[in-house]
Every structure is written in C-alpha cells, then in structure tokens.
Length: 75
Ligand SMILES: [Zn+2]
Image (cartoon, rainbow, N blue to C red; front, side, top):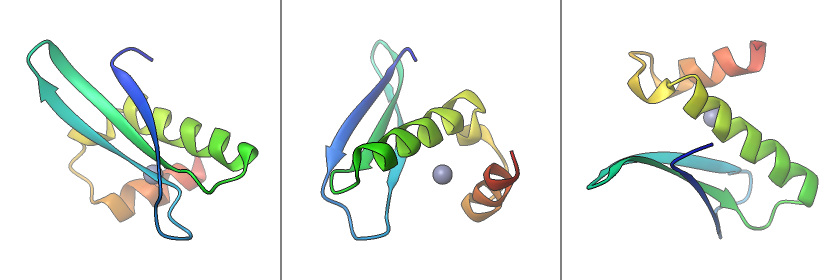
C-alpha cells in the first residue's frame, strides 16, 4: 500500500489499532498504529483491517466510526 506506514505502539488492552490520515507536503499519508502486545497472528489481522479502511477510503466516509466498524464485520 503506497503512502501507508505501520507503527507498533503500546495501546490499551483490547485496542488493536487505529489509522490516522495526514496531509503532508508530498501527499496524503496513512499511519496505522498497531498494538505492540498483539500476537503475530493478531497483528496480521490488525494490519489487514487497517489496510481495508484505507482501501475503502473510510476516511472520507460520512458514516460514524462505529457504523464503519459494523460494516467491516459484515464484509
Ligand atoms: Zn477499524
């Protein structure tokens, strides 16, 4: 995924990850913060989950975060 970076980070238990979009001088970037305490398998799932948000362009969505997460579970 171009313009996407992954940063392992200590996050609260149960919090798998989050992605923030930033507009930088050379374009838009997505930074996915992934909980560093996850197992290898859970990390893979969290990474794929955040990539899906970016590929679905959920950042431009008019839906709330909780609606977007509900939609993801049915995909
Ligand atoms: Zn999500």
